[in-house]
Image (tube, rainbow, N blue to C red; front, side, top):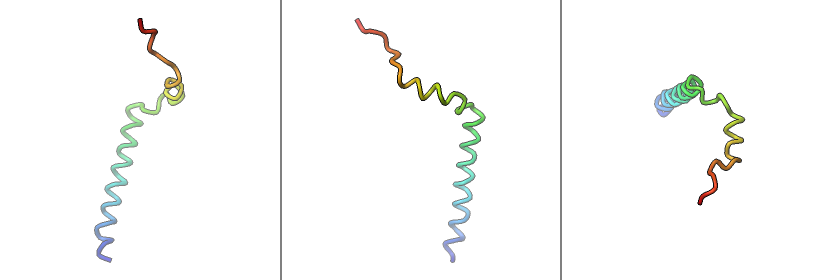
Length: 50
């Protein structure tokens, strides 16, 4: 039972850190262009090398 005294606050802190990280990514527009990022890997941006 004493382990719950430690595990509950630790889980709440980790959950809060996860929510804070998610909110940071939303505020910094990390999810703005999901389709563009997925398609960008398919194209070769490097030109022909001489």
